[in-house]
Image: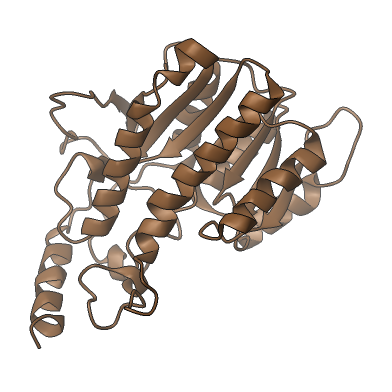
Length: 294
């Protein structure tokens, strides 16, 4: 169910930078307490926390808990710390994620850190297992508090609805998030617990590392993190965003992703794809030649 965020508390993973940092700032500006759970903070986030972590009568606070979201004990500790600091939890945003970096990349078969010894794909641990586990924990806390409300805001991507040949693990992970979000839609009418997802287009965050920036052109227009954060806030406060909703966010435009027979992302919409995406495709073919069958 929708509710005003003033006086509420949010736990945001990945809030040390990018979209989730802007979401954290927006929540705080509306009077909502926030605990950021992340491995580290950007200088901007450090400054933000230093200004807002002190207890002041009648003011919302923002605090930081160093957290490896792939470590279930650390993730649990973030929830416990949030309850210890603020005494309540109303909003969960498991926003920490990666954009299939070289160290956990399907095409980097030989040089990736995803090895027989590691026994996993780190990209999938961060992008799928962590948000699912965080949602499971949030549901437990929401039920224990018996407030009759609670909202989880997931981060998906247009890659969930489109061919993502250069980053197949990323595409698969975001398709999983969209499906998971829709699957939990029935929680809202029964329990008042809403699970929704935003699917942002190109947002210039630290996820866009040097190897990905070559997929873009200088003339490309980017979606801003602030635009995405505003849609995330609407998902909390507006009735129209019922549980299970997935919303794509382009530059100045949004689109509801249909659960069945969705036509896919609008390739002509501003901010939805890089102007040099074929560079990513060619890079993938190059890695197939250099790393497979040798």
